[in-house]
Length: 199
Image 1: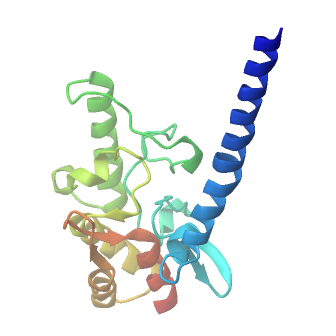
Image 2: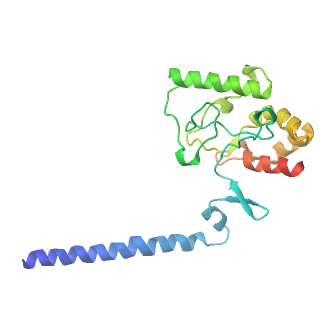
Image 3: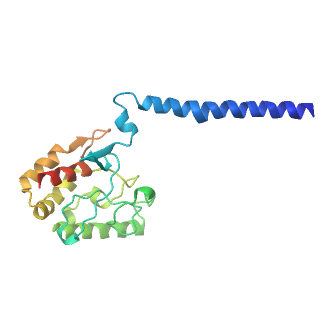
């Protein structure tokens, strides 16, 4: 009985110490580090605000939905594997890749469907649709698209917003940034906000 009590007390002490250490001190330490100047914006989710209201995150790409698809004024993100239809907006709560191989018939069919839908939306030949426009990323929530995909969408956005095409191209260039691995990309949220401001 003494041994059982002794072992129970040791287990209880370990539980209390680890609860305080991992349940209180570690989270508090992480929170304090997040308050260091220069880190706070990233610690708060990289929220983008306009006129005092949060409009999205610079690190999470959520595809905008046009009220009237025939007069779509938005640049669009890459497709999400988590959406129900080929070009449906991605749901941030169900992000993730499809895990389908390049020879998977369903994936090939989806890519062809996406290519045809994008070509129709943009009024171009299907062969001119760039790869990133039809393939979902691993996370399904990339905030950026290639310059080629942005350039493909520019005439439609210019026509539906009334902003001159040259101004749209300037905004694309201004919102093109090099990602962590050096590949330039256009942040779709920032670009859409810039276009909205230019109207």
